[in-house]
Image (cartoon, rainbow, N blue to C red; front, side):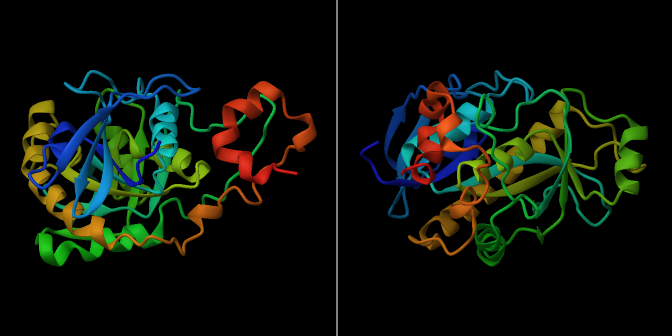
Length: 289
């Protein structure tokens, strides 16, 4: 890509309908992993070129398990993106995390069963460090924006990622609470893993829409409730993004940018040519002789 697009944003359709977004174009990309969820919406925001991707496609056509996470993240990498801000809907597993609050999680717990969460394999083994799964610098910028957005933002917390598409049973919700989980959702975990494998900084704004189904004082979780509260939170998400984008530094001081430096296990001489070609964008700089 010829444009300097360093910042990616992934979330619902309302995000890229920002009044401050100008000079908009639409970019359709092919990747070695198939097609992303939709075209990327590229525009200028607060002096920076940014790329938005509707996670579930326009009109919300794709379930969480149908998403092509690899294509989505690879597409951002292909455009030159170095930072991804994710906006995702979650349920709360704690009394003190209320609907319409926002959590900036710093940990994930994977309960998915059928999703591909890595670019690697097919003759190239790589094992990234993932003890701290979000970029601390980007997460801090999102949290600090609270003063201007005037939202109830919680710093840190564990997001438990379930397969879906059904919401939790009451028994599951009670177990997750007993484990000490803070919020529950169906997406961010795979995005965070793949972003780290692509050496892209990743942090999430988890928009709390409900109390899952454990709370005795609240009604059962429904799509109507989730969508209603998510729409209420969109304006806050837009404010935070607009505040954060101009503060994202040109140079990265975090470890995300070198996540693959000591992660590749396979000797370059035995990597199949077709695999090397497929992953050149990600690993090429580490395999030069």
